[in-house]
Amino acid sequence: MGLFSNISPFVESGIFEMGASIIIQLKGVEKTLGGQPVLRGVDLGIPKGDITTIIGPSGEGKSVLLKHMIGLMRPDRGQVLVDGVNIAQIHDRELNEIRKKFSMLFQSAALFDSMNVFDNVAFPLREKRLVSKSDIQRYVPEMLVRVGLGEMGHKFPAELSGGMKKRAGLARALVMGPEIILFDEPTTGLDPLMAHTIHDLILAMHKTFGFTAIMVSHEIPKIFPISDWVAMLKNGKILAMEGSAEFQRLSDPLVHEFISVPGSMAAS
Amino acid sequence: MSIIQGIGARVIAQIQEMGAMVLFLLRSFGWLFRPPFRLFQITKQMHFVGYKSTFVVILTALFTGMVLALQGYYSLRKFGSEGLLGSAVALSMIRELGPVLAALMVTARAGSAMTAEIGIMRITEQIDALETMAINSLQYLITPKMVASLISLPLLVALFDVVGIGGGYLVGVKLLGISGGSYWSSIESAVEWKDVYGGILKSISFGLIISWVCCYKGYFTKMSAEGLGKATTESVVLASVLILVWDYFLTSVLL
Image (tube, rainbow over all chains, first blue to last red; front, top):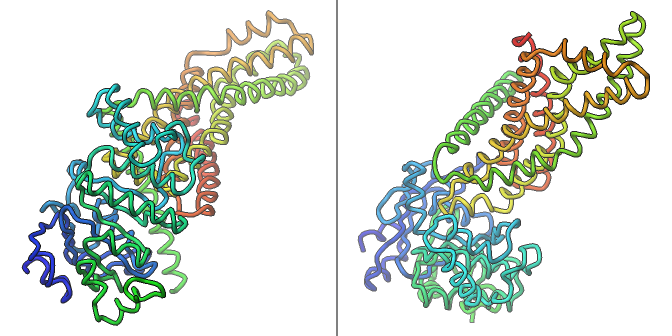
Protein backbone atom coordinates (compact mmCIF):
# COMPACT_ATOMS: atom_id res chain seq x y z
CA MET A 1 0.00 0.00 0.00
CA GLY A 2 2.90 2.27 1.10
CA LEU A 3 3.40 5.02 -1.46
CA PHE A 4 -0.21 5.26 -2.47
CA SER A 5 -1.85 5.06 0.91
CA ASN A 6 -1.63 8.83 1.37
CA ILE A 7 -3.01 9.70 -2.05
CA SER A 8 -6.68 9.04 -1.62
CA PRO A 9 -8.91 6.37 -0.16
CA PHE A 10 -9.68 5.16 -3.67
CA VAL A 11 -6.21 4.10 -4.65
CA GLU A 12 -5.56 1.48 -2.05
CA SER A 13 -7.12 -1.24 -4.10
CA GLY A 14 -5.16 -1.63 -7.25
CA ILE A 15 -1.68 -0.66 -8.18
CA PHE A 16 0.60 -2.40 -5.74
CA GLU A 17 -1.20 -5.70 -5.96
CA MET A 18 -0.36 -5.59 -9.65
CA GLY A 19 3.29 -5.02 -8.88
CA ALA A 20 3.61 -1.72 -10.77
CA SER A 21 6.53 0.51 -9.80
CA ILE A 22 6.25 4.27 -9.57
CA ILE A 23 8.24 6.34 -12.09
CA ILE A 24 6.93 9.81 -11.17
CA GLN A 25 5.67 10.81 -7.77
CA LEU A 26 4.26 14.16 -6.70
CA LYS A 27 4.14 14.91 -2.98
CA GLY A 28 2.16 17.85 -1.64
CA VAL A 29 2.66 19.93 -4.80
CA GLU A 30 1.29 23.46 -4.51
CA LYS A 31 1.30 26.14 -7.20
CA THR A 32 -0.21 29.61 -7.33
CA LEU A 33 -0.46 31.42 -10.66
CA GLY A 34 -1.41 35.09 -10.89
CA GLY A 35 -2.41 35.10 -7.24
CA GLN A 36 -4.80 32.20 -7.81
CA PRO A 37 -4.04 28.85 -6.12
CA VAL A 38 -4.11 26.20 -8.86
CA LEU A 39 -2.58 23.14 -7.21
CA ARG A 40 -3.30 22.84 -3.48
CA GLY A 41 -1.29 19.84 -2.39
CA VAL A 42 -1.28 17.26 -5.15
CA ASP A 43 -0.19 13.74 -4.19
CA LEU A 44 0.05 11.42 -7.15
CA GLY A 45 2.07 8.40 -8.26
CA ILE A 46 2.47 7.44 -11.93
CA PRO A 47 2.95 3.70 -12.49
CA LYS A 48 5.80 2.79 -14.82
CA GLY A 49 4.96 1.43 -18.26
CA ASP A 50 1.23 2.14 -18.07
CA ILE A 51 -1.10 4.75 -19.52
CA THR A 52 -2.37 7.06 -16.80
CA THR A 53 -5.00 9.63 -17.70
CA ILE A 54 -5.69 12.71 -15.62
CA ILE A 55 -9.20 14.06 -15.98
CA GLY A 56 -11.00 16.95 -14.36
CA PRO A 57 -13.02 20.06 -15.11
CA SER A 58 -11.54 22.78 -17.32
CA GLY A 59 -9.30 25.24 -15.55
CA GLU A 60 -8.48 22.84 -12.71
CA GLY A 61 -4.76 22.86 -13.54
CA LYS A 62 -4.31 19.55 -15.35
CA SER A 63 -1.87 21.01 -17.88
CA VAL A 64 -0.09 22.85 -15.05
CA LEU A 65 0.27 19.51 -13.27
CA LEU A 66 1.72 17.94 -16.42
CA LYS A 67 4.23 20.79 -16.80
CA HIS A 68 5.41 20.19 -13.23
CA MET A 69 6.24 16.57 -14.12
CA ILE A 70 8.75 17.66 -16.79
CA GLY A 71 10.08 20.70 -14.95
CA LEU A 72 8.53 23.34 -17.23
CA MET A 73 7.05 24.70 -14.01
CA ARG A 74 8.44 24.38 -10.51
CA PRO A 75 6.15 24.01 -7.51
CA ASP A 76 5.86 26.69 -4.81
CA ARG A 77 5.86 23.82 -2.31
CA GLY A 78 6.15 20.05 -2.49
CA GLN A 79 8.24 17.52 -4.37
CA VAL A 80 8.22 16.12 -7.89
CA LEU A 81 10.21 12.89 -7.91
CA VAL A 82 11.25 11.37 -11.24
CA ASP A 83 12.93 8.02 -10.65
CA GLY A 84 13.52 9.20 -7.09
CA VAL A 85 15.14 12.55 -8.05
CA ASN A 86 13.34 15.67 -6.86
CA ILE A 87 13.30 17.81 -10.02
CA ALA A 88 11.73 20.72 -8.14
CA GLN A 89 15.06 21.61 -6.59
CA ILE A 90 17.76 20.69 -9.09
CA HIS A 91 19.91 22.85 -11.34
CA ASP A 92 18.86 23.35 -14.97
CA ARG A 93 21.75 21.20 -16.19
CA GLU A 94 20.66 18.24 -14.05
CA LEU A 95 17.07 18.86 -15.08
CA ASN A 96 18.08 18.58 -18.73
CA GLU A 97 19.59 15.16 -17.97
CA ILE A 98 16.27 14.05 -16.42
CA ARG A 99 14.36 15.48 -19.38
CA LYS A 100 16.15 13.07 -21.69
CA LYS A 101 13.77 10.42 -20.33
CA PHE A 102 10.78 12.49 -21.48
CA SER A 103 8.90 13.63 -24.53
CA MET A 104 5.77 15.71 -24.66
CA LEU A 105 2.94 16.05 -27.12
CA PHE A 106 1.51 19.53 -26.65
CA GLN A 107 -2.10 20.60 -26.98
CA SER A 108 -1.20 22.67 -30.06
CA ALA A 109 1.37 20.03 -31.18
CA ALA A 110 3.99 22.83 -30.89
CA LEU A 111 5.62 21.97 -34.22
CA PHE A 112 8.34 24.42 -35.27
CA ASP A 113 6.59 26.40 -37.97
CA SER A 114 9.82 27.31 -39.74
CA MET A 115 10.57 23.63 -40.45
CA ASN A 116 8.75 21.02 -42.51
CA VAL A 117 7.41 17.83 -40.93
CA PHE A 118 10.55 15.81 -41.70
CA ASP A 119 12.82 18.41 -40.11
CA ASN A 120 10.50 18.71 -37.10
CA VAL A 121 10.75 14.99 -36.46
CA ALA A 122 14.48 14.91 -37.19
CA PHE A 123 15.15 17.97 -35.00
CA PRO A 124 15.76 16.21 -31.65
CA LEU A 125 17.98 13.60 -33.35
CA ARG A 126 20.06 16.28 -35.06
CA GLU A 127 20.33 18.37 -31.92
CA LYS A 128 21.47 15.48 -29.75
CA ARG A 129 23.70 14.05 -32.49
CA LEU A 130 22.97 10.52 -31.35
CA VAL A 131 22.62 9.06 -34.84
CA SER A 132 24.31 9.61 -38.17
CA LYS A 133 22.79 11.64 -41.01
CA SER A 134 22.12 8.48 -43.00
CA ASP A 135 20.31 6.93 -40.03
CA ILE A 136 18.17 10.06 -39.72
CA GLN A 137 17.26 9.76 -43.43
CA ARG A 138 16.17 6.17 -42.79
CA TYR A 139 14.66 6.47 -39.33
CA VAL A 140 12.49 9.59 -39.70
CA PRO A 141 10.50 8.35 -42.74
CA GLU A 142 9.90 5.07 -40.88
CA MET A 143 8.50 7.00 -37.95
CA LEU A 144 6.32 9.11 -40.23
CA VAL A 145 4.91 5.96 -41.81
CA ARG A 146 4.11 4.58 -38.34
CA VAL A 147 1.98 7.62 -37.53
CA GLY A 148 0.36 7.67 -40.98
CA LEU A 149 2.25 10.64 -42.43
CA GLY A 150 4.42 8.74 -44.86
CA GLU A 151 3.97 11.21 -47.72
CA MET A 152 3.81 14.38 -45.66
CA GLY A 153 7.45 14.91 -44.74
CA HIS A 154 7.88 17.91 -47.06
CA LYS A 155 4.82 19.79 -45.79
CA PHE A 156 5.01 22.67 -43.34
CA PRO A 157 2.86 22.77 -40.17
CA ALA A 158 0.66 25.53 -41.63
CA GLU A 159 -0.32 23.13 -44.44
CA LEU A 160 -1.45 20.35 -42.09
CA SER A 161 -4.84 19.63 -40.55
CA GLY A 162 -5.24 19.45 -36.77
CA GLY A 163 -5.06 15.64 -36.77
CA MET A 164 -1.95 15.63 -38.97
CA LYS A 165 -0.24 18.09 -36.65
CA LYS A 166 -0.95 15.82 -33.69
CA ARG A 167 0.46 12.84 -35.62
CA ALA A 168 3.58 14.79 -36.52
CA GLY A 169 3.91 15.86 -32.89
CA LEU A 170 3.56 12.23 -31.82
CA ALA A 171 6.26 11.17 -34.29
CA ARG A 172 8.58 13.85 -32.89
CA ALA A 173 7.77 12.73 -29.35
CA LEU A 174 8.54 9.10 -30.20
CA VAL A 175 11.67 9.58 -32.25
CA MET A 176 14.10 9.74 -29.33
CA GLY A 177 12.68 6.58 -27.77
CA PRO A 178 11.65 8.22 -24.48
CA GLU A 179 10.77 6.34 -21.30
CA ILE A 180 7.92 8.72 -20.54
CA ILE A 181 5.60 10.64 -22.86
CA LEU A 182 3.28 13.39 -21.62
CA PHE A 183 0.16 14.04 -23.67
CA ASP A 184 -1.52 17.39 -23.08
CA GLU A 185 -5.07 17.03 -24.37
CA PRO A 186 -3.98 15.17 -27.52
CA THR A 187 -7.43 15.21 -29.11
CA THR A 188 -8.60 18.74 -28.34
CA GLY A 189 -10.00 20.45 -31.41
CA LEU A 190 -10.33 17.24 -33.43
CA ASP A 191 -13.51 15.71 -34.78
CA PRO A 192 -14.71 12.52 -32.99
CA LEU A 193 -13.39 10.22 -35.71
CA MET A 194 -9.95 11.80 -35.69
CA ALA A 195 -9.94 11.81 -31.87
CA HIS A 196 -10.63 8.07 -31.96
CA THR A 197 -7.81 7.59 -34.50
CA ILE A 198 -5.34 9.51 -32.32
CA HIS A 199 -6.32 7.45 -29.26
CA ASP A 200 -5.83 4.24 -31.25
CA LEU A 201 -2.47 5.52 -32.44
CA ILE A 202 -1.34 6.32 -28.90
CA LEU A 203 -2.40 2.86 -27.75
CA ALA A 204 -0.64 1.17 -30.67
CA MET A 205 2.57 3.14 -30.13
CA HIS A 206 2.42 2.39 -26.42
CA LYS A 207 2.19 -1.33 -27.16
CA THR A 208 5.08 -1.08 -29.63
CA PHE A 209 7.46 1.08 -27.62
CA GLY A 210 6.36 0.39 -24.04
CA PHE A 211 6.74 3.93 -22.73
CA THR A 212 4.97 5.32 -19.68
CA ALA A 213 2.16 7.58 -20.86
CA ILE A 214 0.57 10.35 -18.86
CA MET A 215 -2.35 11.94 -20.59
CA VAL A 216 -4.48 14.93 -19.74
CA SER A 217 -7.84 14.64 -21.42
CA HIS A 218 -11.49 15.66 -21.40
CA GLU A 219 -12.51 12.81 -23.69
CA ILE A 220 -14.89 10.91 -21.46
CA PRO A 221 -15.68 8.07 -21.98
CA LYS A 222 -13.17 7.55 -24.84
CA ILE A 223 -10.18 7.57 -22.51
CA PHE A 224 -11.35 4.61 -20.40
CA PRO A 225 -10.60 1.81 -22.88
CA ILE A 226 -7.08 3.07 -23.57
CA SER A 227 -6.11 4.00 -19.99
CA ASP A 228 -4.68 1.64 -17.40
CA TRP A 229 -5.21 4.21 -14.65
CA VAL A 230 -7.44 7.24 -14.31
CA ALA A 231 -6.93 10.07 -11.83
CA MET A 232 -9.26 12.99 -11.26
CA LEU A 233 -8.05 16.46 -10.33
CA LYS A 234 -10.58 18.56 -8.48
CA ASN A 235 -10.13 21.70 -6.40
CA GLY A 236 -6.37 21.52 -6.84
CA LYS A 237 -6.04 17.99 -5.43
CA ILE A 238 -6.24 14.43 -6.72
CA LEU A 239 -9.73 13.39 -5.79
CA ALA A 240 -9.37 9.80 -6.93
CA MET A 241 -7.05 7.45 -8.76
CA GLU A 242 -8.03 3.97 -9.78
CA GLY A 243 -7.69 1.38 -12.48
CA SER A 244 -9.77 2.38 -15.49
CA ALA A 245 -12.60 -0.10 -14.87
CA GLU A 246 -12.68 0.52 -11.12
CA PHE A 247 -12.71 4.26 -11.65
CA GLN A 248 -15.96 4.04 -13.57
CA ARG A 249 -17.58 2.21 -10.67
CA LEU A 250 -16.57 4.73 -8.01
CA SER A 251 -19.44 5.94 -5.88
CA ASP A 252 -17.94 9.34 -5.06
CA PRO A 253 -20.62 11.83 -6.18
CA LEU A 254 -18.13 14.30 -7.71
CA VAL A 255 -16.48 11.58 -9.78
CA HIS A 256 -19.82 10.10 -10.73
CA GLU A 257 -21.18 13.47 -11.78
CA PHE A 258 -18.13 14.21 -13.92
CA ILE A 259 -17.96 10.92 -15.80
CA SER A 260 -21.68 10.26 -16.11
CA VAL A 261 -22.24 12.45 -19.12
CA PRO A 262 -24.97 11.28 -21.51
CA GLY A 263 -23.75 8.45 -23.69
CA SER A 264 -20.69 7.75 -21.58
CA MET A 265 -19.60 4.22 -20.82
CA ALA A 266 -19.90 4.92 -17.12
CA ALA A 267 -23.49 5.98 -17.54
CA SER A 268 -24.33 2.98 -19.67
CA MET B 1 -5.24 49.44 -1.74
CA SER B 2 -4.06 52.94 -0.94
CA ILE B 3 -2.41 55.21 -3.50
CA ILE B 4 0.97 54.81 -1.79
CA GLN B 5 0.65 51.01 -1.87
CA GLY B 6 -0.26 51.22 -5.54
CA ILE B 7 2.78 53.35 -6.35
CA GLY B 8 5.00 51.06 -4.27
CA ALA B 9 3.71 47.97 -6.06
CA ARG B 10 4.42 49.54 -9.46
CA VAL B 11 7.92 50.59 -8.43
CA ILE B 12 8.68 47.10 -7.12
CA ALA B 13 7.31 45.57 -10.34
CA GLN B 14 9.51 47.87 -12.43
CA ILE B 15 12.62 47.02 -10.39
CA GLN B 16 11.81 43.31 -10.68
CA GLU B 17 11.46 43.64 -14.45
CA MET B 18 14.79 45.47 -14.70
CA GLY B 19 16.42 42.70 -12.67
CA ALA B 20 14.80 40.07 -14.89
CA MET B 21 16.09 41.88 -17.99
CA VAL B 22 19.65 41.97 -16.67
CA LEU B 23 19.52 38.27 -15.74
CA PHE B 24 18.12 37.49 -19.19
CA LEU B 25 21.04 39.31 -20.80
CA LEU B 26 23.68 37.64 -18.63
CA ARG B 27 22.23 34.16 -19.11
CA SER B 28 21.93 34.62 -22.86
CA PHE B 29 25.56 35.71 -23.11
CA GLY B 30 26.67 32.98 -20.75
CA TRP B 31 25.39 30.41 -23.24
CA LEU B 32 27.64 31.86 -25.94
CA PHE B 33 30.66 30.22 -24.35
CA ARG B 34 29.14 26.76 -23.84
CA PRO B 35 28.75 24.11 -26.53
CA PRO B 36 27.06 23.45 -28.86
CA PHE B 37 28.24 26.59 -30.65
CA ARG B 38 25.43 27.50 -32.98
CA LEU B 39 27.31 28.96 -35.94
CA PHE B 40 24.55 28.09 -38.40
CA GLN B 41 21.95 29.89 -36.28
CA ILE B 42 24.24 32.93 -35.94
CA THR B 43 24.81 33.05 -39.72
CA LYS B 44 21.07 32.70 -40.34
CA GLN B 45 20.34 35.58 -37.97
CA MET B 46 23.07 37.74 -39.54
CA HIS B 47 21.36 37.19 -42.87
CA PHE B 48 18.08 38.32 -41.33
CA VAL B 49 19.30 41.24 -39.21
CA GLY B 50 22.12 42.39 -41.46
CA TYR B 51 21.68 41.45 -45.10
CA LYS B 52 17.91 41.90 -45.19
CA SER B 53 18.21 45.36 -43.62
CA THR B 54 20.61 46.66 -46.23
CA PHE B 55 17.98 48.02 -48.61
CA VAL B 56 16.17 50.08 -45.99
CA VAL B 57 19.50 51.27 -44.57
CA ILE B 58 20.78 52.33 -47.99
CA LEU B 59 17.55 54.17 -48.76
CA THR B 60 17.52 55.98 -45.41
CA ALA B 61 21.21 56.83 -45.64
CA LEU B 62 20.96 58.16 -49.18
CA PHE B 63 18.17 60.61 -48.44
CA THR B 64 19.64 61.58 -45.06
CA GLY B 65 22.93 62.47 -46.74
CA MET B 66 21.11 64.34 -49.50
CA VAL B 67 19.01 66.43 -47.13
CA LEU B 68 22.03 67.12 -44.90
CA ALA B 69 23.92 68.44 -47.91
CA LEU B 70 20.98 70.56 -48.99
CA GLN B 71 20.50 72.12 -45.55
CA GLY B 72 24.24 72.39 -44.95
CA TYR B 73 24.90 74.09 -48.27
CA TYR B 74 22.47 76.96 -47.66
CA SER B 75 23.64 77.41 -44.06
CA LEU B 76 27.34 77.37 -44.97
CA ARG B 77 26.83 79.68 -47.94
CA LYS B 78 25.81 82.48 -45.56
CA PHE B 79 29.35 82.36 -44.18
CA GLY B 80 31.01 81.65 -47.50
CA SER B 81 32.10 78.22 -46.28
CA GLU B 82 30.52 75.90 -48.87
CA GLY B 83 33.84 74.11 -49.12
CA LEU B 84 33.28 72.64 -45.66
CA LEU B 85 30.11 70.84 -46.77
CA GLY B 86 31.87 67.48 -47.06
CA SER B 87 33.19 67.59 -43.51
CA ALA B 88 29.80 68.71 -42.14
CA VAL B 89 28.02 65.82 -43.85
CA ALA B 90 30.69 63.23 -42.97
CA LEU B 91 31.03 64.19 -39.31
CA SER B 92 27.24 64.28 -38.80
CA MET B 93 26.95 60.89 -40.45
CA ILE B 94 29.85 59.13 -38.78
CA ARG B 95 29.38 60.52 -35.28
CA GLU B 96 25.60 60.63 -34.90
CA LEU B 97 23.19 60.04 -37.72
CA GLY B 98 24.75 56.85 -39.05
CA PRO B 99 24.67 54.88 -35.79
CA VAL B 100 21.36 56.31 -34.52
CA LEU B 101 19.31 56.17 -37.72
CA ALA B 102 20.64 52.76 -38.75
CA ALA B 103 19.83 51.44 -35.27
CA LEU B 104 16.32 52.89 -35.38
CA MET B 105 15.72 51.35 -38.81
CA VAL B 106 16.99 47.96 -37.64
CA THR B 107 14.77 48.22 -34.55
CA ALA B 108 11.73 48.87 -36.72
CA ARG B 109 12.52 46.16 -39.26
CA ALA B 110 14.38 43.38 -37.44
CA GLY B 111 13.72 44.15 -33.76
CA SER B 112 9.95 44.04 -34.10
CA ALA B 113 10.24 40.80 -36.09
CA MET B 114 12.41 39.27 -33.35
CA THR B 115 9.78 40.06 -30.72
CA ALA B 116 6.97 38.72 -32.89
CA GLU B 117 8.84 35.52 -33.82
CA ILE B 118 9.87 34.67 -30.27
CA GLY B 119 6.47 35.72 -28.92
CA ILE B 120 4.62 33.42 -31.33
CA MET B 121 6.96 30.59 -30.35
CA ARG B 122 6.09 31.27 -26.71
CA ILE B 123 2.33 31.38 -27.32
CA THR B 124 2.29 28.23 -29.46
CA GLU B 125 4.42 26.35 -26.88
CA GLN B 126 7.36 25.95 -29.28
CA ILE B 127 9.72 27.31 -26.61
CA ASP B 128 8.34 24.79 -24.11
CA ALA B 129 8.84 22.09 -26.76
CA LEU B 130 12.53 23.04 -27.02
CA GLU B 131 12.90 22.84 -23.24
CA THR B 132 11.24 19.42 -23.09
CA MET B 133 13.85 18.20 -25.60
CA ALA B 134 16.54 19.31 -23.13
CA ILE B 135 17.55 22.14 -25.48
CA ASN B 136 18.17 25.46 -23.78
CA SER B 137 15.84 27.93 -25.46
CA LEU B 138 18.05 30.91 -24.60
CA GLN B 139 21.03 29.31 -26.28
CA TYR B 140 19.07 28.15 -29.30
CA LEU B 141 16.94 31.26 -29.88
CA ILE B 142 18.32 34.31 -28.11
CA THR B 143 22.13 34.04 -28.09
CA PRO B 144 22.43 33.78 -31.91
CA LYS B 145 20.21 36.85 -32.34
CA MET B 146 22.33 38.86 -29.92
CA VAL B 147 25.61 37.84 -31.55
CA ALA B 148 24.19 38.51 -35.03
CA SER B 149 23.04 41.98 -33.98
CA LEU B 150 26.42 42.81 -32.43
CA ILE B 151 28.18 41.86 -35.68
CA SER B 152 25.62 43.25 -38.13
CA LEU B 153 25.04 46.72 -36.66
CA PRO B 154 28.60 48.05 -37.14
CA LEU B 155 28.57 46.77 -40.73
CA LEU B 156 25.21 48.39 -41.44
CA VAL B 157 26.37 51.63 -39.84
CA ALA B 158 29.52 51.62 -41.99
CA LEU B 159 27.29 51.16 -45.05
CA PHE B 160 25.00 53.93 -43.84
CA ASP B 161 27.96 56.32 -43.44
CA VAL B 162 29.36 55.58 -46.90
CA VAL B 163 26.00 55.88 -48.67
CA GLY B 164 25.10 59.00 -46.68
CA ILE B 165 28.35 60.71 -47.62
CA GLY B 166 27.72 59.65 -51.22
CA GLY B 167 24.21 61.16 -51.05
CA GLY B 168 25.75 64.39 -49.79
CA TYR B 169 28.18 64.33 -52.73
CA LEU B 170 25.32 63.91 -55.21
CA VAL B 171 23.47 66.96 -53.94
CA GLY B 172 26.45 69.12 -52.99
CA VAL B 173 28.67 68.48 -56.00
CA LYS B 174 26.42 67.29 -58.80
CA LEU B 175 23.33 69.36 -58.00
CA LEU B 176 24.54 72.49 -56.24
CA GLY B 177 27.88 72.70 -58.00
CA ILE B 178 30.51 72.85 -55.25
CA SER B 179 33.90 71.45 -56.13
CA GLY B 180 34.28 67.69 -55.80
CA GLY B 181 37.87 68.09 -54.69
CA SER B 182 36.98 70.41 -51.82
CA TYR B 183 34.13 68.05 -50.76
CA TRP B 184 36.47 65.07 -50.39
CA SER B 185 39.45 67.01 -49.03
CA SER B 186 37.34 68.63 -46.30
CA ILE B 187 36.23 65.14 -45.25
CA GLU B 188 39.82 63.89 -45.22
CA SER B 189 41.03 66.78 -43.09
CA ALA B 190 38.07 66.82 -40.64
CA VAL B 191 37.34 63.17 -39.92
CA GLU B 192 39.59 61.59 -37.31
CA TRP B 193 39.97 58.01 -36.18
CA LYS B 194 38.22 58.78 -32.89
CA ASP B 195 35.08 59.80 -34.83
CA VAL B 196 35.03 56.46 -36.63
CA TYR B 197 35.86 54.58 -33.43
CA GLY B 198 33.05 56.38 -31.57
CA GLY B 199 30.57 55.47 -34.29
CA ILE B 200 31.60 51.81 -34.19
CA LEU B 201 31.30 51.74 -30.39
CA LYS B 202 27.85 53.27 -30.59
CA SER B 203 26.70 50.83 -33.23
CA ILE B 204 27.86 47.81 -31.19
CA SER B 205 26.05 49.05 -28.08
CA PHE B 206 22.91 49.78 -30.13
CA GLY B 207 23.04 46.24 -31.52
CA LEU B 208 23.07 44.95 -27.99
CA ILE B 209 20.15 47.17 -26.94
CA ILE B 210 18.00 46.12 -29.92
CA SER B 211 18.51 42.38 -29.52
CA TRP B 212 18.31 42.49 -25.72
CA VAL B 213 15.07 44.48 -25.47
CA CYS B 214 13.31 42.89 -28.43
CA CYS B 215 14.20 39.29 -27.49
CA TYR B 216 13.27 39.87 -23.83
CA LYS B 217 9.85 41.29 -24.71
CA GLY B 218 9.14 38.37 -27.04
CA TYR B 219 10.40 35.71 -24.64
CA PHE B 220 8.18 36.93 -21.81
CA THR B 221 5.16 37.88 -23.87
CA LYS B 222 1.69 37.35 -22.42
CA MET B 223 -0.09 34.28 -23.79
CA SER B 224 -2.49 36.07 -26.13
CA ALA B 225 -2.59 37.82 -29.50
CA GLU B 226 -3.20 41.11 -27.67
CA GLY B 227 -0.22 40.42 -25.42
CA LEU B 228 1.97 39.76 -28.43
CA GLY B 229 0.89 42.99 -30.12
CA LYS B 230 1.60 44.90 -26.91
CA ALA B 231 5.00 43.23 -26.53
CA THR B 232 5.97 44.14 -30.10
CA THR B 233 4.95 47.77 -29.63
CA GLU B 234 6.72 47.98 -26.27
CA SER B 235 9.90 46.46 -27.65
CA VAL B 236 10.14 48.97 -30.52
CA VAL B 237 9.33 51.96 -28.29
CA LEU B 238 11.64 50.90 -25.45
CA ALA B 239 14.53 49.99 -27.75
CA SER B 240 14.20 53.28 -29.68
CA VAL B 241 14.10 55.37 -26.50
CA LEU B 242 17.03 53.49 -24.99
CA ILE B 243 19.04 54.03 -28.18
CA LEU B 244 18.50 57.80 -28.01
CA VAL B 245 19.17 58.03 -24.26
CA TRP B 246 22.26 55.81 -24.45
CA ASP B 247 23.47 57.84 -27.47
CA TYR B 248 23.46 61.00 -25.36
CA PHE B 249 25.45 59.42 -22.53
CA LEU B 250 27.92 57.74 -24.84
CA THR B 251 28.43 60.96 -26.83
CA SER B 252 29.09 62.93 -23.63
CA VAL B 253 31.75 60.37 -22.67
CA LEU B 254 33.34 60.17 -26.12
CA LEU B 255 33.57 63.90 -26.80
